[in-house]
Amino acid sequence: MLVSSKELFKVARKNNFAIPSPDFVDQNSIKAYIEVAEKLNLPVILAYAEAHKNFLSFDEALYLGKYYGEKTKIPAVLHLDHGTTKELIIRAINEGFKSIMIDASMDSFEDNVKKTREIVEYAHLKGVVVEAEIGHVGNGEDHRSNDNSESIYTTVEEAKKFVELTNVDSLAVSIGTAHGVYKGKPVIDFDRLKEIRNAVNTPLVLHGGSSSGDDNLGRCATEGISKINIYTDLVIAAFNKSQSTKSKDYYELRDAQMEGMKECLEHYYGVFQTKKFK
Image (cartoon, rainbow, N blue to C red):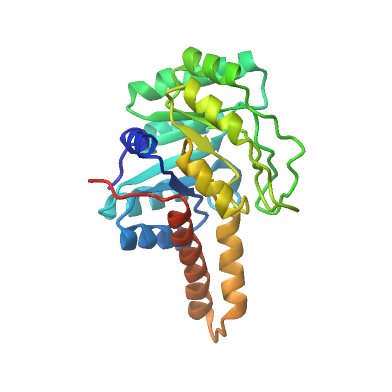
């Protein structure tokens, strides 16, 4: 069933665990994520990133997300990830996404607040929740990026002020992760995470979870992060599984790729210590 993340995050924050938010880029990936969530009887956030529109169009993502999200019996959130185009964000709000992210993190603080507040006001009228980012997690064009040189760490003062000015429902913070594949193991600023969590009541989100290390992610989940985004590790797992499996046709190759994704996501459910919702 499609639900809002609002109540899910309240439970996650109260009980110190995180919910995985894997990006889907086709029918096979979204089916794999749903199957894992159903197997474990745990919620899932089905994320579609605007940056992946060359892999999967918005219309296709909307159809797949609504179809599989409404069909499943576990709580599923259809989420627009890293929305940067206002027109697309408005479409997502109007046409069935339960959660959207407005990403203006590379703008000035004032412009980020202005753009976010405008989207929040409109989305809340439609019953849709909004995530935004303060600071900036280094980003590339796709999963092959490994450059985190553009990362801008989130300050406690700006996080607190941003939440007060925008009334955003969840806040993505930059504390040492980056999108894509790391050349080395990231160093997470857990002191900064603790300070931000204590300063704001808004659920916190971590982007760039892939390759951050199980110990790091486990601590993030239990020390203040309610949602962790993963993508790169999933597609790498799919590729590696297909390479290590002897496939004689398309169907066996597809199944191997899906199995790789499923194994990876199930692993992260454990790392994030995601718990069942009653």
